[in-house]
Image (cartoon, rainbow, N blue to C red):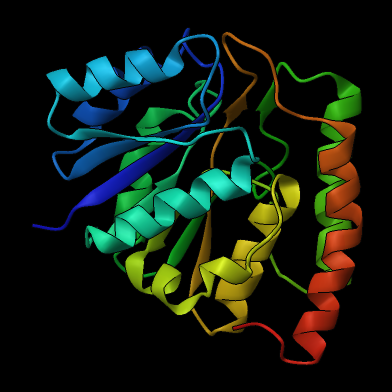
Length: 239
């Protein structure tokens, strides 16, 4: 039977992690969970260990320090490849990504290589964001399309499902972006290697508990990273 892995990168998610794991696992018998915790000071890692002890489908990777979303996902991707999972998900642990959409992803990934949950493919489907953040996200995606040529409505979205073959084809050690730009770069690399990308509509909700990891540094990185990705694309530097 095919196996799917949902990767949750966590830093101070003690209020969410147990609830989201229990919400995700019943969605499909193929689903397993990997929690990648960046040494959360609030005890998230200890909760993750307890969940793993109680449920064989839950595993935990403990990292020594917080290095950003991108590094956490790269560690999770490498583990998923070693364990031969067929489908690998990126998903937030804070319920901004609805577990009910996992079934739609698993359906579409049968005929595509990378499936992206899109907030903007059918209008604007974001709940409870301040207008300033919504506008920043919406126009950041338009900016990304113009600069890179990547034909996605939501290139910065973080709810994704990869076939293992996509991650095996990408040199993960060459991926250095973290926040918004990490999502752009992974999709860009998959697209440039000829893989089939598909966006499906989702509704994105502001987190239920905890605090957002968004920062000015993440925004600045995304602004210049799209130009670097364009240059790499022009000169065939993706590997």
